[in-house]
Image 1 (spheres, rainbow, N blue to C red):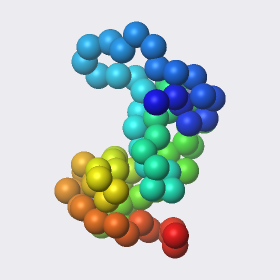
Image 2 (cartoon, protein in one colour; image 1 turned 90 degrees about the vertical axis):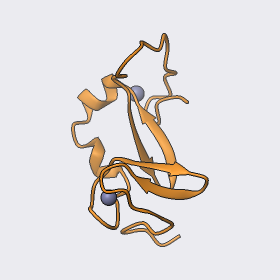
Image 3 (spheres, protein in one colour; image 1 turned 45 degrees about the vertical axis):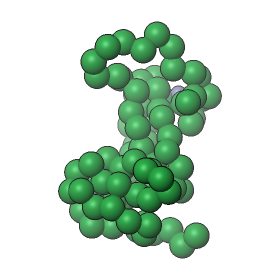
Image 4 (cartoon, rainbow, N blue to C red; image 1 turned 90 degrees about the horizontal axis):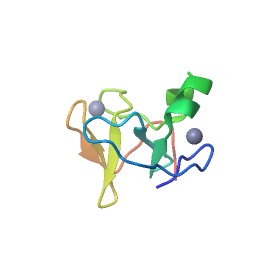
Length: 82
Ligand SMILES: [Zn+2]
Ligand SMILES: [Zn+2]
């Protein structure tokens, strides 16, 4: 999956924690590279937020939203009406 901002493809995945960040934008799982995270410190503002806790540590699993922060699972997204 390429970076959703610059399109750069993740290379040489290092074992352990990746500097690439994951998130959900408009119900799409996205990745953002470390460069874009630095260039756009407000990048998390573009992410969808958990309707339960407001966190951005979300993933899409089988079409539903899963929050890794509070464990929320569902279809709803705050601030979006699709
Ligand atoms: Zn990027
Ligand atoms: Zn949550």
